[in-house]
Each structure stands twice: as C-alpha cells, then as structure tokens.
Image: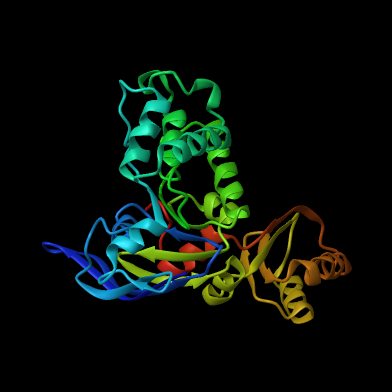
Length: 307
C-alpha cells in the first residue's frame, strides 16, 4: 500500500530524517514509535504531501508521490497533532466546511457526517460549538474531519496527546473499528502501550533513523531481549549458586540474595523452582518480567523512550 525508499529530510542544520525505508501493507495498522524529535512527524508529513523530502521516493497505492500528488491526496486522510478546528463553529459546521474542501457532494457529505459522528460518539453534541468541547472531544472531531472523503489510508500523528484516559480509550476504539472496516492506518506515538495495543507492525525510530521494524515478536528477536525471572532467597551461598548454575545452564546474574535469570518462562520457570528447592533454597520472592517494547527499545537504542 505504501513503499518508502531511502527517504531523507533536513531543516537548516538538523537532519530530521536519515535515509529511511519501509513498506506498509494494505489493511494494517503501522506504528512509528519514538521520542519527541525522533523524526516521526516529519516522516508522516512527507508521506502526506505537507513537506517535500530532500531525497528518496514515496509510492502510495502504486502512485509515485512526486509525480502524482493529487491522486495520492485523494487516497489519504491526515489527523495532525494540532487541533485544526474553528472554535466558533459547531462540530457539524466544522465538518461541513472540511467536507466542502474535499469537494464531497452535498448529499453524500450529509450522510458521511452523520455516519462519522456516530462512529466517534458525538452525534448528540453535533450542534454544540467546538469551544464548549473538552480536549478529548476536539481530538475526535479532528479525526472525523480526516474521514469525510472516505480515504483508503489514514495518517494519525500522536492523536492522543493531552487527552484524558476515557477519551484516549475511545480513540483506540475508533482506530480499531476503522481498521476492521479495511482502512490502512499509519500511527505515530511515543507511548509504548498504544503501539502494543493497536499496531500490527512497528518501526522504532530514533534520531531520524529507523533502528528496527517488524511485529512485536520480531522486534524482540532483533533486540535479543529475553524474559527474566527475578527470584530472591532468604539466603544463598557461593556453593549453592554454582550448583544452581550448573544444573540450570541459564544466564544468571546475582545481586545479594537475589538472582536475575534469562529464560523461557513457560519452559523453565517450574524447573527453576524445583531445582532451587532441591538445594534447600528458601524462596521469599519471585517475579516474572516478560520482554516488552520498553525493554526492546532500551536494548536497541541504549536509552529509555522518554530520556
């Protein structure tokens, strides 16, 4: 659906995006995960024709963006980070205005507005002025305005920034519903839990470069991150530790009376407990730490996502 090859963009002395390539499949939710300033928005802005790249190519549904920009614009909807609404208009009036810019015929536009207002859960507030809306409600109308021309692809740039948990969950539900209907969605965020819930595949981007991309399980393999069992004993001496290492044949790091053990929890956890008991080690605490995107990001980039 989208093919990007060797895309780069600089602003004065800042190399915002550095020679990135990726493919987005039809009907998937593809996520860009990275900190602020990583290049997520610049990449999205180049794909959505807002910013022109310095080098590289972008193909949208087989159309070369550099040669067929108008055709590409018809295929995409864009949800920007900034709220692009008129406060003195009602939600319905805002959607009428944006729909007219897309040149949606009046009769069709009326039907689309009603359908989308039901989808985002704001039909009952359609005649209220935008200035009376909460931040989360404005975000949902922002999404609605990008859907009026029924695009095949939806670009969403950090759509949950500054919203309350209830509105954030509603936005998640909207994304999931649109994807179930067949829409391809490109989603940028710096929240781990959002890409874990929503995205089929993820590109980890940092300092303008794609560090890794793939499904969550593929990223775990690329990063080398494994599950960990942290187990604490009332006491453990060097002899017991050496016997434990010899029996388990796993990577073990000792901190005082606690061990961090790299393992496959489904396969190894019961064996770890059994062997520990056989050496008269009294377990006082045990915690399973599954590999997640936070540990993957840390391992691939050498820093926390919010550093």
